[in-house]
Image (tube, rainbow, N blue to C red):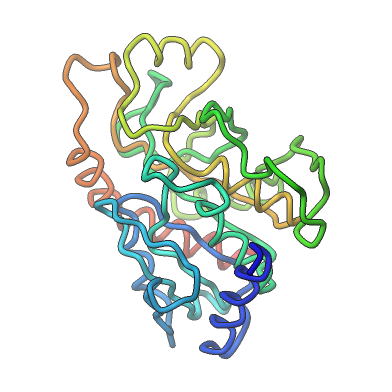
Length: 272
C-alpha cells in the first residue's frame, strides 16, 4: 500500500468515528496536551486504534486524537506527535497532518514547547511563529512528489498565515494576554543545543528553537492547508542562563501556563 493510500485509510477510519469533519486541527506539543480535555461532545481515539498512525513515546505526549466542539466549531486535537529524533522518517512525522488535510481540515494550529533564544523572552511566554528556519537537515517533500497531496515546488513565502496571526493577536488582546512574535528554528535533536549553536541561531535571526513543527508546517502548506504556529517558551536556551537544561523544566513550565494556553486556543478557535 502506498503512502497516500495509508493516509486515506487513516482519514476514513477517523471519519467513520465522528459526526462532523473538523474545520481546524490543533497539534499539541510537549506538556500542552491538556487542551484535548476541553472539547464538548468529544470522541477520543487512541492513536494505536488508527491504521498506520505512528505513536509518540516521548514524555509529555499522550497519544490520542480528540474530536469535539469548541466555541461552536468542530475541532480535532492531536494530543502528542512523533519526532524525527525518535527514528521516524519525515513522512511518518507528518502523517497526522496529512490525514487531517485529506479528511478535509482547512486550518492547522501547530503548537510546541521551545527554548527561548531571544533574551527579551521569559520562561512561560507564548510566541506566535512568524516564520521558521528549518535546520533539521531534512524536508518531508524529498522523494517522488504525489500530486494528490500538492505541487512539486510549493511556495513557502507565507508558511504561517498572516490572517491567522492577526486572529491570534486579537485573541491575546481580548484575554489581556501578551503574545510575543518571532522566528522558530527547527533542529533535529534530541540533544539540546550547545551555547555556541544558540549564539549562531540568534545571529541568523531565530527567536526560539525546538525539534518539531517545521516539517508539519511544510506538509500542511504543500496541501494548501492554512497554518498557525504557537510556541510555549518553556525554558531559556543553552547559555542564556547559567544552568543546564532539563526536560522536567519543560514539563513544569507547560503545566504552569496551562490555563493561559487553553484560554488562548479557545479564543482563537472562536474567532475563526
